[in-house]
Structure formats: structure tokens, C-alpha cells
Length: 347
Image (tube, rainbow, N blue to C red; front, top):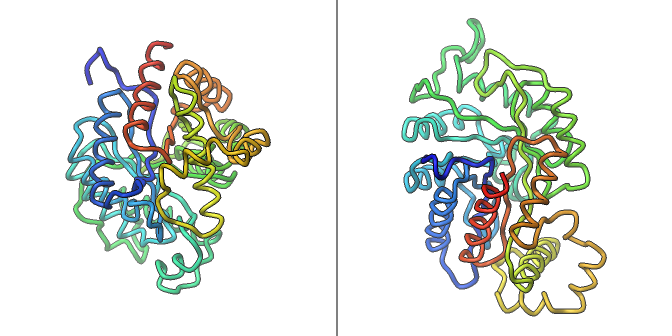
């Protein structure tokens, strides 16, 4: 990247929303447009999530999206935040991400989560009906994956003869995701980078990431392990000089959360967001802080960057991951670009 536009400690987490009236193909093309825009703006990473059984999202296969998005960009790191490991075989995940590394060396990130990324019935189908004890199985799954991505297993291990092909020297940057204390605590104990979902659990984000840094134990000998702690915090963010735009972003998220609670998984109509943003019900929600403060950092770009930097400093995070769903893509790109410009100006 040029010296005029150096990489910023900023990333994007994209749910790859399907806007009302568009096709999945248009949504996926839109994701490429967002990735290209934030690369131009100087973001360091562009991540896609893993969600299932959602008509409003096009991110059920993040590994395929990563390949496509990396092919449409040049420098930005592209990855999953994350791969929900209980839904997958660690061996297969290693094969997929080694293939991605062979295609795009030095640009692939692998975030790992233990949630299903969906409802219980869909999780049952994804796991072929197998009874999974995530609490006890997850640490072993992670250890298997890191071994397959690295030097393999010790002699005598049942999996020692196996090779996750194609064999490449490159390794993905590995992040442990979390919206509770478990993920960062697991990362600290195992020498891994941590990402905390402030956009899901804002009330504990700062404390959990501070604890991660205090308790970090250097890792060695396995893929993804680090000698020093490294953390990121993901935050619902929207920047605009237009207060009505900000209001609609907040209303869009509140509607999304309300619909999910009611089992509605369809794209939201823009006029529904506009009407709801100006409704007495939403005004009451804002006063009560429901689905909003302290979950969001919104306002002008100057105010947003000040809020993000304050949160980053308090959480002792190395990077900030912007989460900007629920609005049309043009406004989302404008917000992300404005934050990057202001971040650079405030440095």
C-alpha cells in the first residue's frame, strides 16, 4: 500500500446482507464492492461471517466468499469471522484454508467461533444430527485444526499420517472469537489473538479484553500462536453528517433484532426502516437504550472516531472492527470511508 494511504488498524465485519429487492448474486457483487472500497480507504482486513438459514444474508459459505473477495482485491487481508468450528471437520477447514493460502499468499485470516451461527434445528442439520458437547469438544477441535495447519501431529498420534493438502508454508492469521468471556480467555491461555464482539455484548467488552491482555500466555509450536497478545474489538458503527441517516441506521438494527426475536429472517423494506425511525415506539426505545447505547458508536465521523479510539484505548485493543449492517450499501460504504479518513486525520 502506498505511503499516502497506509494500512489503518481498522477492519470490517460484513454479514453480506441481501437488500430488499435484490438477488443473492447482487448482494455478493455488492460485498466485492464494499471490500474494494475499504481497501482503497486503507482498512487492513475485510471479514465475512458464517450465518445459516437466513433469507436476508448471503454468508452461509464464508470460505467460498473469501476466495472470490480476495480475487477481487489486491492487498487487504480477507477472512472469516468466523468459521463456526463445531459445524465443521477441523481437517476439512485446514484443507480449505491452505487452498486459500495457495491462491492468495499472505492475505488470509481465520477467525474461529464455537457458536452455531444459527438456530438449534439448523445446527442439528449442519452436524448431521450428531450430539455435540461444544464445551468439551471445542478445545480439541482447535488443537486438531492448528496441528493440521502447522507441522502436523507428533509421531504415534493416530492422525500423524494425515496431510491437509495442498501443503503450503504460509499460515493464516488465526483469531479466537467471542461474545462472552470464554473466547478471549481461551485465546489468552493458548497464545492466540482474540476478537471480542462488543456489538453483541457491550457491557463486558472492555473488561474481557483487558483480562485477555493481563492473562495472555505466549504460544509456540503451533500454527496461529503468538509470542505477544493481539486483540480486536468489533463495534456497531455508523458515521454521517445527516442526523436522519444516523437515526435510520439505529432503527434498522433495532428492527433487525426485533425481527430475529420473532423468527423473521427476511430483508427489511427501506420504507419500513424510515417509518420506524420516526415512530414513537423507536423514540421510546432510544430513551431506554434498547438495542442501542452503549452498543453503537454513531454520529459525525469526528464523533465516531473519537468514540472508537476511546473504546479501543480502554479495551487495550490493537484493532477495531467496524460492523455496519442494516442500510443500503452506498451509505455503508460512505460511512466506512468517512471513518477511515477521519481516523487518519486524527492520528
